[in-house]
Image (cartoon, rainbow, N blue to C red; front, side):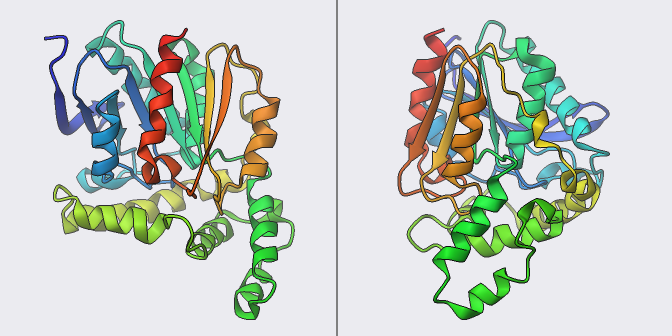
Length: 307
């Protein structure tokens, strides 16, 4: 029974609503990798190929958050605030601990999910054995990204003209401007897997478990979650991010991430105090680096069992 594989894809009750959760693993004994997706509302459960690779070493848990993906398709409910999502995530974690007693849990926050996961660790640090962030959002991420792209497009007048419509001080951007910049920035690079076309759209098309209704719910959920959370994200105080943690802390950073650049990530990483901390630069990768280069995740298993 200990080595029995797991293939769970269904709704479970989390704080009053049915939320979509998938659990995949080749063995129940594998450490749990709980994925907190970005967005807001940008689910990762369509990344079937990468998940299959992760599942050889981990019990991979994808969760379509309140207001996102298949959860939004089931019921048109959006989060009241970020804390609502944090509480849903903590409830899911507690359920996982009951189903998988004594199995280590790695919490992985990606992009905006790195904010949610960070807050989850602060409110439930005893629930987790290792915290990992990818595409870590920081106070300086958008400024570094804007300055970097502006320099790269200095001989491209049309692209530079679009960029200069944004305030030069990215700390004053609204959530709408951030979203517009992220999409624009992601499609500029041709030397790394493109977040929109190569990753999201390609995986949606190739995943036979993703219907056109699921694709529609993905888009609608992102829009609804944005409307619900954009004011809070506009004013989010990045000083709330943890700087002291009692568990191993790991960041995977795409070497050519156009949205959360390595310089900003390094600045935050240097501030964090942890018993063990590692920063892995993933080559030939941009945003969503572990879905572009899933073999890089293997380093986590060694770290969690080294405690």
